[in-house]
Image (cartoon, rainbow, N blue to C red; front, top):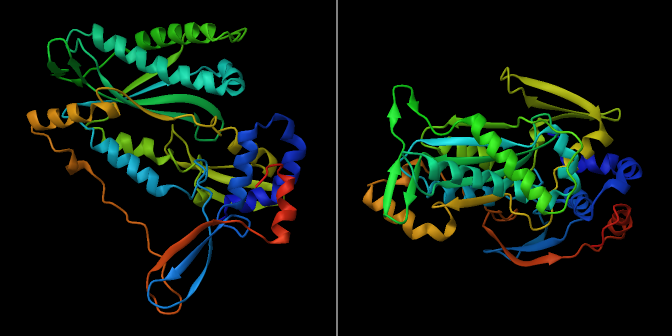
Length: 368
């Protein structure tokens, strides 16, 4: 397995020479964090054996949400929280995509465009649910922003897991869509795309951002049935805290080239893509989100503030979401090399003091 940090270390100098003028502060911080993750250059933590007196220093994980081997535990915790919000209804995976002509705008004004993308997608679902004859109420949605395609190009879109159900607060009614001969039908895709497009145009104009000179009149929205919803949540959680590429998918790093594999969405088969190391790093860093941006949000009756309401629904509808819970994977304990007992953390965030490390860091341009 080829570590992403080693790829960055090999191509960082050439990459910065070519792309430094295009990088934001957050992207520079990400480059430094991903390179130093779990290396001698990262801050250290002191661990001590719970049985004998043995102790040593262990490098910290960077904790960056673009890192492919950090925050697996946080990803599992998020998935467990969302599984607890499942309700007895057919679920749908809705996808709203920005057209290619808007990608430059999204890259230049990521905080505004990404926030508008998620908010307008939810407002579209809310409007259709309130106007639907069978629902006539407020729906719920679990939304996750993705910025990449399978080949790692910049491709902003938002996924929403939406139950085919709604709550009418005024009448205190719980309503679900009825199943027909061909299953449950939620909303018309083309109609949703039109409403979403209008809301996005209004949001960007209200923010005072000039619109692209040309963009299509017809945008894209998809609506796919996903059964009880747990598989869709697992899919969304896969990229929430683990970056845009797995290190197992980096196949080679040699002769100035990096190759990685991805799954072709049309054929379902694995394919390989090779490009220069500099271009590969640019592909990765395009997906650094603005600082503090929440890429996973809950709306409607699935909002975090509605926990009591969800518990009441589970009780009245005799529904137990625990049966969908994946098996919990506990964090593996660190064991003492001397006696095999469990090591405990006694001190954290010990700064690296190696002169060799300090000499390398200024090349990234980020203070430690």
